Image 1: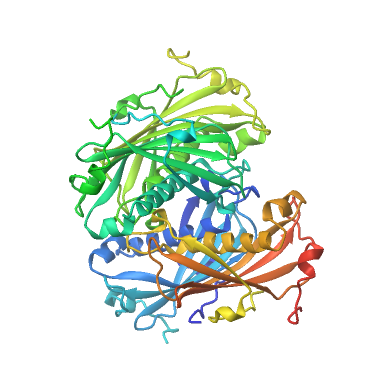
Image 2 (image 1 turned 30 degrees about the horizontal axis):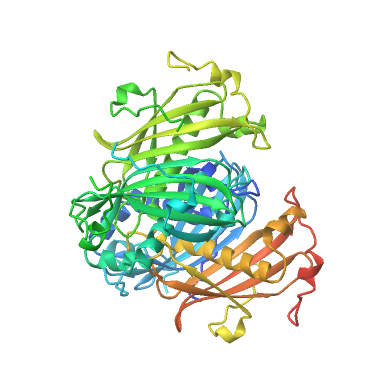
Length: 145
Length: 145
Length: 145
Length: 145
């Protein structure tokens, strides 16, 4: 297990927030958003964070680097419902030479609905591990390992 | 509109059937299978038909040909529910130099649930129209136009 | 076939537009947005239109009415790609006592990528056909049939 | 974190296996199965395990019990590709009064592609925690806590 980041439930611990309105197509027969639908929410928020930092993912990919998902951990705390606007708070951490981790806090209003962590590895077009792009490596903070 | 094939509700009009069990992830808050989930069912049945004919789609793609979806028409007649096994009847028709059409009949037991037609165009790796592979063109029947 | 509305490629023929950014999760191995991913785009735009008119779909559903999808017709004209922002133009038409049709024009910049039409029927909680809500019936224009 | 089960990479540690053929709709622009598509695979295998044990999930739900997903942990070890048949090995463990955990091992041939664990809680129709059904509680083995 590479996953070591802990997703805080305090939005002050995150530096970026992206809003997503849930879709009816994402509901299930329990009347709530299906648990698999959260995974694209995390990805969308992550992509918006990269874009906000000047590195849209579709441009990163043109440079021959993909960020493969190595691990995913989601804690579903309260359901999401159709028509709600979810605030997905995002923070990058635990950057190594070829991997990084991302923490997520999903809230509706002041209510914590979900927390999650993903672990990513940079890979080239052939799927081989490759060093992180310099701009991402430079984002390494005190918990660089 | 290129779509001209009509999807019969008589299974005798189809030469191939593929069974799919609906997934809970495909349900929605109305308690039925969401209408968008049918589209991958059609695709899965189409891919099984190609594989059955000796041309698995992942091998077709290795030869540099993709079958882009140009048009899609679905008639939802009765809902599908979680846990049901759907018989997807499939038939190819209306083959031209660079396009073909596929008709679908979805049944559970003897009950018609849905009919559909898709129109496809052969494209090369760059997305440009290209002639159909010879084995597919050879499948042209009396309604070749 | 109930479908009779034609989706114009002129945005001036539509009264409402909703923007959607494509997701990486919606791409496929052809490097474009998978054709099944358009169906939730149509639904999201339709829901936004209802909400804009003061009738959010999750509130319509609380009143015991669902708008079942009866038919779907999509014409894929040019691919959508990851990271693009799609303008989904929406217009309601062909309102009958218990059904209505919706036309869609999907553009990126000035480029037409896709047109579509959906046919809907009002159903009660048990899935039986029921008259359209008065506010929707009142939206009937000259092509009411 | 409730998750405590560890997913073994030895198929001998699992008592049930379910086969799933990957869909083209589940691929992404990296040419592999998108990481979010694995989540319905886990769910489908879980549902097949219940059905195999004489308790199809759609019948469990009719009795007023749902198994909400509380936590999800996935380790993506090697990519899945379009057209592959995945053997999803499944085992239930760590049963408490109102929760249980499920471990998964996804293999293609003899190759480990992915391991995962889900944590579930029994909930009633209103979404409140409720005791596990007796037949599931009875499945508790030595690691019952």
